[in-house]
Image 1 (cartoon, rainbow, N blue to C red):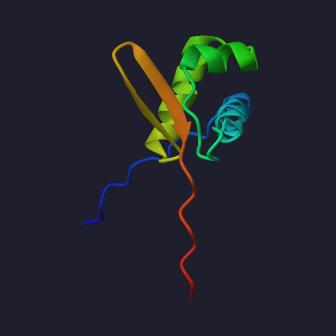
Image 2 (cartoon, rainbow, N blue to C red):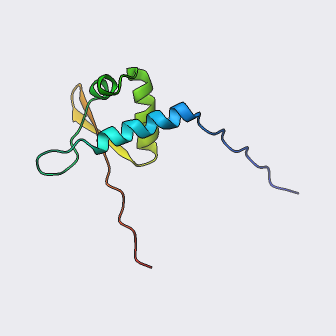
Length: 91
């Protein structure tokens, strides 16, 4: 008997991929005086990129799922921060 296979997920539309990359690139460009990534609110990202806040949140959710950004903050002040790529392990 063969194992059931799950269908492959459909690819994301190009516009969605471009928005996700724009959000990530924006966050990677936000650094504090110490050189560390600085947190930015979803609304600030949306304003800067000229994109709807809900669309930005979806991009942030996917980027968080993929380990590229983190969310932090206290109270109603949630900030999103880029995550440094892990260093490549020597062969």
